[in-house]
Length: 129
Length: 129
Length: 129
Image (cartoon, rainbow over all chains, first blue to last red; front, side, top):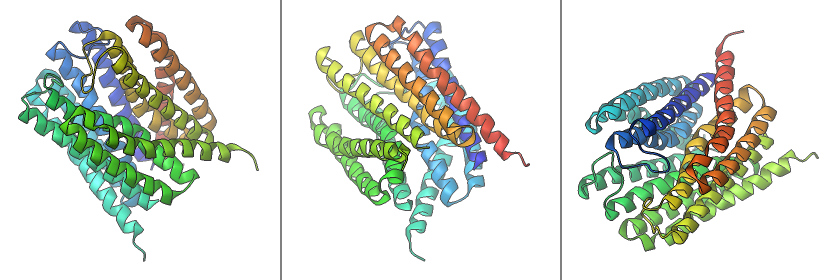
């Protein structure tokens, strides 16, 4: 389980990093708070953060449930794929909206495996012997 | 506890489904990424996803804490009410903004019971015998 | 651990309260759903909720991991600092965008300590004796 905890904290620090980039993009592209729109270059950096927030809400419970009912090692490994996928997503989407597909898929796939795997594992654990 | 895990993963898959609807609404109503506004029909579908994100952040820890300190079976039952409430919310809000009340209440009520019940259960667990 | 659960539920009820303020600000500043922009006074209240959502996604797993690998009492104490910081943030940001710095720092600092502390604790727990 400590492997899973380490991957989870890395995913959260990555998310914090994306938040810092939004702050920098506010200055760079002239979009002062509380606005979150008005400049497409800013909006793409902001969407990286928001979309990662959406993914994290599925990733975090998913990795714990999968680790508990299926395998902690596979959970941690899928978490590493998620981390790489999110880095690719941020790098691509920051440049252009049509460059967000690869990274999105590479991070959404492990999330889906964690959720469906975790659901199957939990349902099997409900069944009596 | 596996009942709770199963309900949680279903709530997350429901949220993933809402995210897919946002992607479809982008195409259908002509709101390409990174924009999230400009067409009220799109905005309602987007708000279904965002509001569910807000609810999930309370629902997820709430259901675990309630399950731990109060009752796992009641937690799972309240989770099922939440799931139905969110489905009603999405169906209503996608049609019109004034049709979001019933589903919102039906999903916010179990979340409130989970949080207040969990808080009371945790505080009672602090007290010495 | 019940201390941590109590602080977590309080942080979630605080977030629910911020959500209620957004509903009130919709009426007060004339920004009906599904819109989330158009009036800066509304947008600041809305950003309090959204930024708290971003912080919660890091705070919640962070406090559990820190409590597990480092110290439950310190985790709960850092959680109280976070709660106060968020209250200061909401009070400041609701008035003016340039009054959000103190509260942001006061809530982001405990989150960073929880994440880095939790990461170190988890990595040390991986190492063999």
